[in-house]
Amino acid sequence: MVNELSSITSEVQAVVRDARRVVVLTGAGMSAESGVPTFREVQTGLWERFSAEDLATPEAFDANPALVWTWYRWRQALIGQVSPNPGHMALAHWQHRLRSTGGELSIVTQNVDDLHERAESEVLGHLHGSIAVHRCIDCAEPAQLPAPQYDGFTAPPAPEEPPHCPLCTGFLRPGVVWFGEMLPMEAFESATAAIRQADCILVVGTSGMVQPAASLPLLGLERGTPLVEINPETTDLTELMDYSLRGPSGRLLPELLSTFSGVG
Ligand code: OAD
Image (cartoon, rainbow, N blue to C red; front, side, top):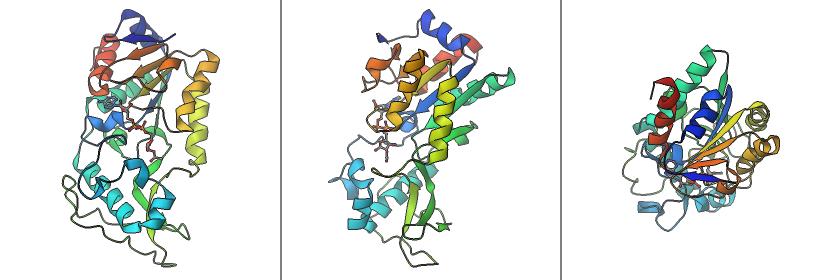
């Protein structure tokens, strides 16, 4: 039965403090306080008629490659301009701390940004790929591209066509997972293996609406592993949780860490 909490109780503190193998599943909310809009936020500029989910599909790219390409390049530019927030920093501290005493904290993220890495965390798996890598949509040849030209805060004035693959002339696409596509096998398998060994699972900043990532906490549920959610809102996963901490991860993760480590 979920325990919805507006503050960190001694019971949650104890569960988290005593865990030696922690898995943290993160979603777009983790980066929200850095200034990266989540997928359910209303868009502006070129994309105001579209939801992010409408743009994150192979069909959308097929129908309007310039629109989808420019949207991803704009998000990439924005991510390049922002910094990890205190939530990212807290997870990095916690990972280093556990590792120094023979434990492990595994970060599995749905985010295509690199803010965990920039906070100096090691990420076990990027379930939805990475926005900064590119490949050909036809022959899958990887491609290196210079950083986008936009400043990241204002939308570009007009959509621009994706560049072409130097090998086969197909369009280049971002190295993210679109709806309906397979997740990278290695990332998913590493995530399931870590979850099967975990003694605590944190679910941070995800709506739990996108499968199969949203089903990962179920593996912990089957084993009776304590599940702790951090999210300002109730989500599709809340019912599964042992504890749901209501608030932003940029505040609650440092607070949680400071209750047992003095760091935060
Ligand atoms: P969503 O945009 O679906 O959900 C973001 C979640 O973050 C919501 O539950 C918010 O309540 C929560 N949130 C907002 N601000 C927060 C904060 N400061 N601290 C903590 N939580 C906060 O993002 P995801 O669940 O990550 O997939 O979405 C999963 C996938 O759906 C994405 O990876 C993407 C998307 O469409 C693909 O592109 C395939």
